[in-house]
Length: 331
Ligand code: T6T
Image (cartoon, rainbow, N blue to C red; front, top):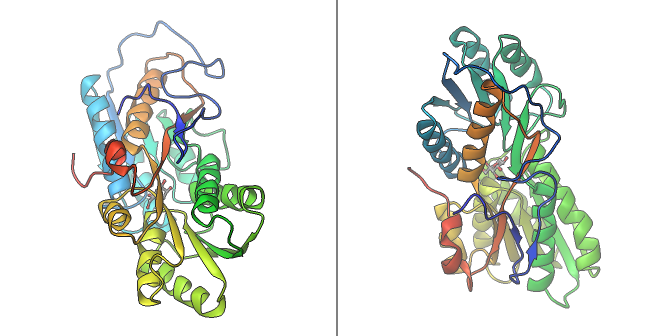
């Protein structure tokens, strides 16, 4: 996908421009101190949210290609679980390695700030990719999807899928402190009030980012809410779990499932009817832009503080024309 294609594509095919700075577009919010000599340290470190997950693998692919093209090295590490207590020691250990820049998807919007600040204090440039800290003073640049807009897009899609129905909808979030999924859940709930006033959210439930917990939450919600007409799952793991939950409750297709991300298993689910829609991100572009901003910061060039990456709604009918948004399991 072209990194210049900077749009949020609605399910219906209409275009909505993303907010804030966008990839490939300069804004004036960055810093500039031009004219620096070529740096001797060209080592970048990427710390993603969790190991072996297609979203982060795709991000790593985009980042590695951009680093290679620019003559930089990029090393990637990941915790075994999406958990700040496992991610923090990885970041702390990087202090001794002294990378020129750290690209990181912080797994908690507050507790990871201490380790990230420590790395910044060694002189490394810190770039946030996907998730971000509440404290905006540590990173030079943050690149992510417009997650609020993604949640809104999911609500508009849910409104279309359930058109005319009354009933309740369940929202599955991951863990508190995850900036991205929190914004998606909030965007969804706000937009649902406008796009589908006859639907009522039964609230946001947390799943610890575990598919098995998401599955249990869905079966429990089906049992206690006979009027449940939809589930919005705010990421890959909640989505995969929700699909399992609906299957065990015998409600596949009867309750509309709108997921986020486009892992191979979610894409299969869209094909076979387990999901009715997916809001896909463009993690490779997030990784590529992260490396570009890191290099700009290292080389004393203009840096964009906030960059928004594309999002697209996929349905069974249009998914084949948007296959470039499917996530990878290897580069
Ligand atoms: O949805 C992505 C990512 O954007 C989010 O921050 C955490 O979950 C994922 O990695 C998917 O599991």
